[in-house]
Image 1: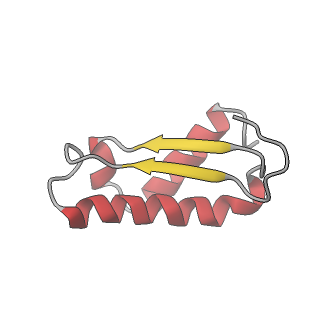
Image 2: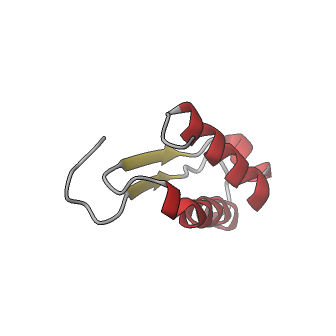
Image 3: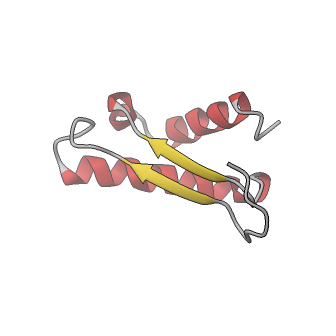
Length: 81
């Protein structure tokens, strides 16, 4: 959702208990997603807002796999080239 005048993009992140029953697992998924977006920050337009809802397979991914999936999704949305 484009919004003019924003200095940086905003992200809403949701990881439910169905994804991982432990807080450690849910926090790991959130940490990986935040770090991936931080590394991609220069390439993402500032006027966008994102809502990311993690699903069960996200628990099994490492940092590289998480970033790879986020890049793939951003390319599907024509946000990255």
